[in-house]
Length: 249
Image 1: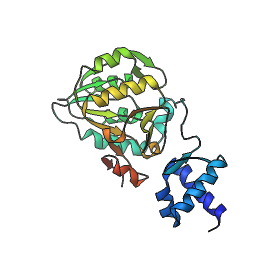
Image 2: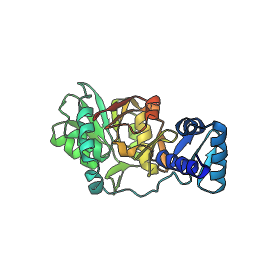
Image 3: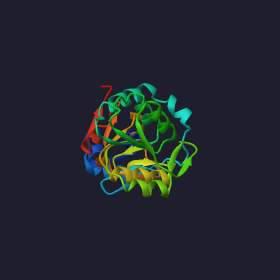
Image 4: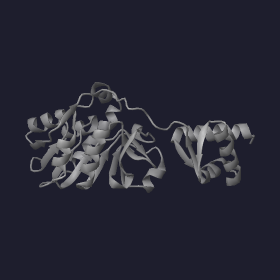
């Protein structure tokens, strides 16, 4: 294989996964690790990638701070979100003290919840309304309302959340990455998520497959802190990091 052909294959792999190791590239391209290291050095010098010890990453793996509105996000991966939500609802038992995070997949979860013996707390305006309409015992935290996601954020809510011990938390995320973990564009929203996960006995991340291999500016938890419920896993390496349930295999 010519060097230029190998360069392009390496770029394709890195752009698809954001981050890759020398060993992975050597195995997939069936060449030596020393050759891959030389290739990565050359691509780094050309400004095509960023090389680090043992591997490389894309030049600009971090996505921006902008978020789609709820109306836009509700139409994306709709079938997958429904399957994820339907399965997640079966995990709620009597006497559970449940946190439900703001987000479109977690909102859909409420449509399938039938357990009226559990107690629910949320930071989602829409979520709180849906829960009480379904006859659930519901609490909502106080604080500032974020316009784009209709999530309640801020120090008031965080202070309240630190007093609770959740048996289960159903969370949302913008990105899932091997190295960056779970990420979101908003610092204040990330702080709420981080506190909830720390205060929950078990946390479930409800995330369709489009969230994988994406990195946003703020990390709020490592992958092993949450069980991931998704439609499918696009990269087997994620299975080595945490428990994953695929609902559309």
